[in-house]
Image (cartoon, rainbow over the protein chains, first blue to last red):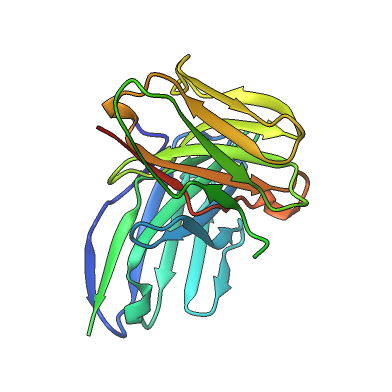
Length: 109
Length: 115
C-alpha cells in the first residue's frame, strides 16, 4: 500500500464548477500536511498547508481528518488557470515529505 | 531571484557516464533535500541535509548515487555509471528548520535523460 494515495484523475470540469480531491495517508505519525500544485514539466509549488481545523484560501478549502487519515481539497469557481496536477503531501518524522502520485485537473471553457 | 536554483536544467548522457547536478538553496535555509520524479509519479525522497550533515538517505539512493553539501550551502548530487532507469527529473528543495510547517520550496529541477 502506498503511503499517500490519491485518485490520479483526470478530472475534467467546466469553468465555474466546484471540484473536490481526496487523499488518504497510512502513517498515523505524520505531522504536517500540504497540497502542492505542479504544472506540466515544472516544479511543485506549495498551494496551501492543511490544518486540523480546516483552512481556506480564497477559492481553495483544505480539510484534515486525523482519525480517518484523510485530507481533502475543494476548489470553488474553477478557472482555466487551475488546470494542473494537485499533489497531496504529508511530512513524516523527522522531516521527510511523502508525495501522492497527484490528481490531474483539466478545466475547460 | 532568491529562490532555489538548479544547474543544469537538462542533461543528456550516455549509459555508463557520470553526471553531477548542483543545487543552490534559498540563502537562509539550513535544510536541503533531493527528490526524484518520474513521469506520472509524485516526487520521491532521496536524501536530505541539515547544514553540512547528511541526515537521511532513502533506500532508492543506491551506491552509485552520492550527495554532498560541504559548506552547508550548495549541494551536489552525483550519479556514477548512469543507467537508463536513472532518467528522471531530479528536484532539490530547501527549508528553514523550526519555521512554521517547515515548508519546502522546490527548484526548477534537472531533467536527466540517459541514452
